[in-house]
Length: 116
Image (tube, rainbow, N blue to C red; front, side):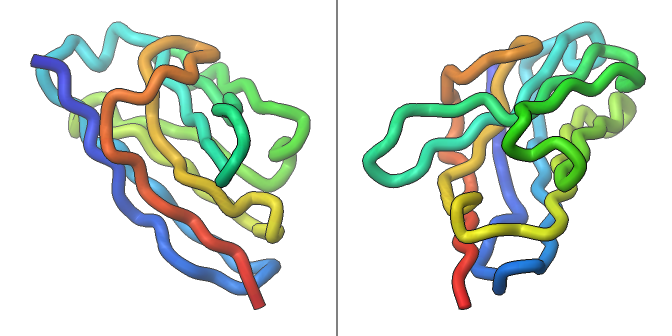
């Protein structure tokens, strides 16, 4: 059974940073492209970033390019999202997904709120 468990969210002031984690189980994590996506209140899901199985080819949405960094630890079956210089418009439920540009949510996600 595939499980994706996100953590690391919270409330932060504009300009702050957070690091999200996604612990994966029940799948061959090291062979899969993975993504981070988000959904803000009242809006549809938005793809944020993706990474190849080797972790050396990240891709980003224009809205987060230069501020966010996706990475992975295949030995720990864990995906990460380092978020810097956060803005109020980054407020959303963040979740990991299977695929290079995926937005389908399997887990509970982790809430990120950027507010002063």
